[in-house]
Length: 78
Image 1: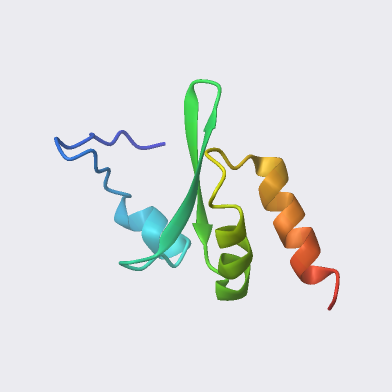
Image 2: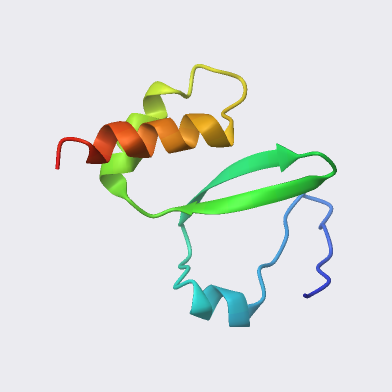
């Protein structure tokens, strides 16, 4: 566990250890989900999944169930 500080611009720095472990690069996109009093960030690594996710973009909130449904739909044809 690491403590990070929110900048005046609303930015957080992900510690280098975690960036290396998860192979995160500058410009990577994330799915942000609020769960109770916590924030969950999931790296959006699959460009094919990205296009499916954009279909959900018109919704104000994307739940973890929505994300699972997107993955299920994408990979059922493989």
